[in-house]
Image 1 (tube, one colour):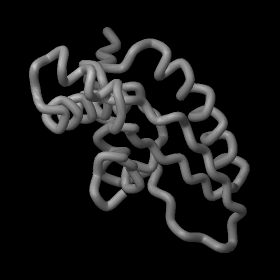
Image 2 (cartoon, helix red, strand yellow):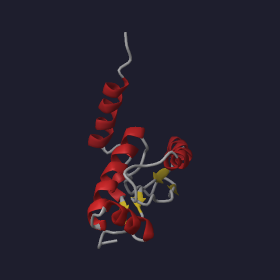
Image 3 (tube, one colour):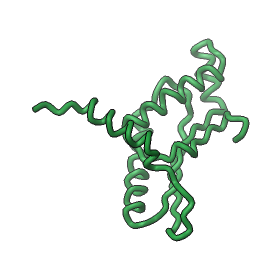
Length: 131
């Protein structure tokens, strides 16, 4: 029997999305714990190896704290303002809003495929007017 990792991982990632497995509910009976990673700049066509390298440690710790009974808030976001986003837009000849939105979608897809336990209902985008 061959292990079809794409099929199996896709199945579980879809289930986590549908059930919002890592969504944090307000629960005063449990101790709170907050984990915040440095947000990536969506200034490239995809994440580089350094992004997940840093996120793996905080994800492991978040999962550990959940197992210990903590109500863990572990959001993800994107630091979309500043020179990196502008430089990428100049290099590609496209408006920063277009490149930023496309890159955020790609980053999110990559982060989901890795299987991080982020609360995506609390996603932060510094380019969002409501931020």
